[in-house]
Length: 110
Image (cartoon, rainbow, N blue to C red):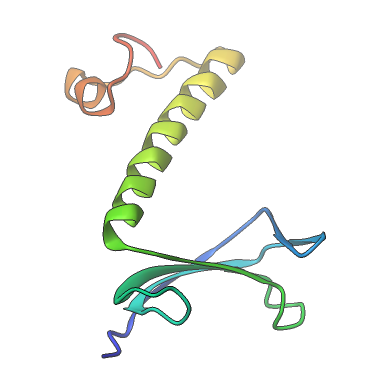
């Protein structure tokens, strides 16, 4: 069954195919039946460059549970990176106690 669940976002970074890296322009997140994994419906992540040939693509098919774990890991990594960025630049950002508890962050400034 096709779900028609598709989200597209701008992407800035690099992806690798074979031995070569290429710049990204878009990321596509979809929920549909797996094309390659021996699974049912999956979250598909595609990282592409629309200015290059169709092979300029890095794709992943994940179970919903794996996608949720990845989302949580991304949230933790982003929070830690924002802390590092604020600390390095001396721009401490104050979070509420609720945000600190939810993110597992250190009390006070971030």
